[in-house]
Every structure is written in C-alpha cells, then in structure tokens.
Image (tube, rainbow over all chains, first blue to last red; front, side, top):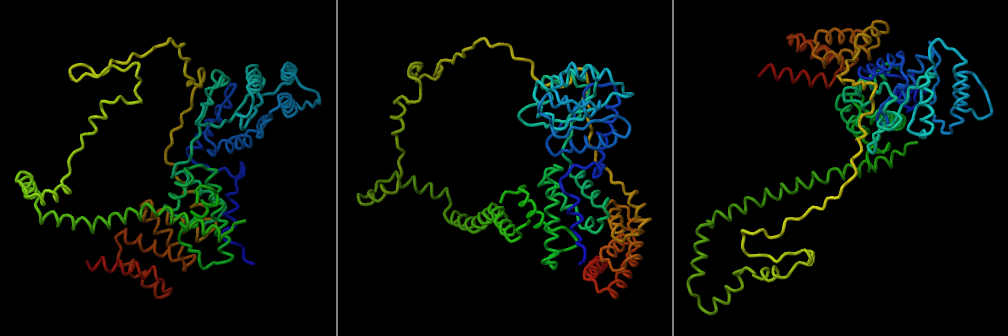
Length: 269
Length: 243
C-alpha cells in the first residue's frame, strides 16, 4: 500500500507540546531570546503571560529543553495544587531529597542553603493561575530567599488582569506577553512546519487565500490552527483513500477547510 | 474518526445559512429594480405640483352632497385625541416629585434633578501596574521573514523538485523574477512534468521582458505534455501581444 501524502502533514499538527516541534518565528524567537537573557539575570520571578493558545507552554518547554543542558532546571507542567506535595516534589527534583513526611517551608529553605549550586536552579511553572494564593506566597518567599528562580506562565483572561494580582505586583522583575499569530506569522508557522518535515508537495498546495481563511477562522491562535490543520489533513487522508478524484493538488479546498473548522468547532453549523 | 457524510451535510447547512443574508439582499435589490421604475414612471405621469393644486382646489370648492360623502372616505383628518392624552399624567412619572407643567416655554418644564451624592470611600488604586520594580518587555511584532536561504541550501543538497517549485514560487511572489526563473529552470530539469513549475518559468520570462522566449517554451512544453493550464496561459499571452 502506498503511503498517504497527507498522513505525515496531519501528524505534524497533533496538538502536543514538544520542544522539537518548536517553529522559529521572528517575534516568538525575539521573545524567546529575551526570556533566555532574563533567566541569566539575578531575577526572582519572570512571568510569561498571554491568552490560551499563544504558545506559552511551548516556550516554557523549549526553555527547559535548552537550559537543562547547562544548569539545574525543574519543569512542573501539571500544577501541583497541594502545598506540601509541591515543596516535596521541588525538594526531590532539585535537591534529590526524598521524604514521605510533609515538608515545611523552613525545612525547605534550610535544604536549599545546605546545597550549593554554581547557578541558582530554575523552576518552570506552567498554568500558574491554578495555584492557590497561599502557595503563591510560599513561592514568593522561596524566590525572595534567592533559593530558586521561577519562570511562570499564566493565562490572560478578559475578566481579570492576572498580572495585577497581589503576588505579581512587586515580585516580578520581568513580564513578557505573548500574542496570537498575525496572518504573516501563521503563514510562516504552517509553511515552516511542513517544510521542516519535507512535506514540500503539501506546502506547495497552500496559497495565500487558504492562509487568510485559516487565520480568520482561528484568529491566529496556534492551538486552534493546529487542530484545524490536523482535521483538514485527516479529511484529505480520508478522501485520498476513498475518493481521490475529488482532491485538487493546486490548492487546499476552501470547502474542506470549512468542514475541518466545523469539525473542530471553530464554525458552529 | 471523521464522519464525512455528516460533515458534508453540516457544511451544506452552514453554507445555506451563511448565504441567507446575501440572497435577501439580492432579492431586495431585484424587487427594488422592478418596482422603482414603475413608481417613478407613475409619479412622472402625475406631477406632484399639479396634483397638489388639484387637491387644494377640490377641498375649497363646494361639492354636491353625494360627492361629499365619497370624499369623506378618502380625505384623512388628523386625530386630535393625543392632546387629551397629554393632559392625563403618565403612570410612569413619579407623582410625588412631579411639578405641574406650565404652558409658558420660558420656564423650565421640570425642576433640575438633584443628584444625591453620598460620600464614597476613595477608589482603590487601579490594579494596572503589574510590575513596579521590574520592566515590561514590549515586543514589537514585525512581519517575520521566511528563511528562504535555508531552503535553498536544502534544495542544493536534496534536489527535491517540490522544494524547487516552492522556492521558485516564493521568489516569483516576492518579485525576484531572475531567481524564480533560475529555480523553475532547475526544477524543470529535475522533473519536467510539473505544470506549475513551467508556468512560473514562463511567467518569470515575461516579467523579465522575454515574452517570445516564454511563448516558445510554452509551445514546446504543450507539444510534450498537452497541458491545459499552459495552453490557457499561452492564449492569454498571444491575446495580450495582439492588442
């Protein structure tokens, strides 16, 4: 059986955060460089915020991937809501201190002063909006004691300005906001993803009108764009198998883009 | 798993739904197109000034009794009942604070409403400044440039015709016609059956002012491939040059 032309592009857009899939786009790359520079500074907290689907988690994973080669970095991508568990996991991951008992903040700080690292370890916290105020206070105290550096990501919502929250007002040295992709950026994102995986023939099928439609439907949201492209190439794979005469190879079908948008819920029909 | 049949139905439903406003507009325009000339032609036959004069004359001249009865059914008289209703106080108005209305226009109809001010606690400082000690990194969004050189390097190494076509198209779209010509030429040399690559090749030649060479190339390609898109483009070129 011949391999499907569209199954590879389809799998490229599976919505998983993998630093190997990081696509370099000028603005994001600029942000990433700024983040990397900030991490090297003697800062306590760095905040990365933006709407869902703007690539915060991807940047955090990329940072983890790159920094862990040179220094101690601890990534907590699934929030640990329990305060005791949080300190215990940190102690285990950073200081290799395993304990079944609850760890107090004082004990944790004692541990940190007992262990010497050439560079202050970095903790990367994803989805920090899920942490309680009490836990955030502990995080603040740990960072104030310069035991650890924190890079945290937060969702920015319409209802509240999260970065204005009490804990972040005075503690954050630097905050970086991520935005949705512009039309040009989305075009580069999709094309680069395809070209990186040698899907040249499919990359050739995508024209400006297609990108405009995709950008309009997803509003430049990377997660939605991934979902839409995945659904679109799933459709193409299906037609390739069941009704190949319907496929036109000179451009992506507007109808199928809309069908994919209906399937992913971007169009309510 | 995708349910294609269901998706197709939903898409059709969505298309019909999205077309409704347009179809209503088109219908309205068509109706207007038909009715407007009729109305205009009717108005033109009876000039408004003449009809007005006629009607005023009719109202002034005494009419016979039977004719008067007929006119009564036609002439509309303004109802003065609303004046009576104005005298009745509206139920929605607060009767305690209401001031009797004066007919003299110089006086204000109602007393100026007194705004009751209660001393509010001072508004807390708005939660806007996220960073007091630190700085906010503002990232300027500029149109990211595509790293075409990296692709060109890859093309050098793998000679993939699809990648060659991609680069040729990229250069053509960006107005680099010499580059698009070069890459289309290289692509054609690797795979001579790619319609689009030949078209970009011919189009680049036209942009470079070598229309005759473009035509010759297209003719040669058509004789080998019988490509419809190449034929169409050749026809367009021939028509343009004959003009």
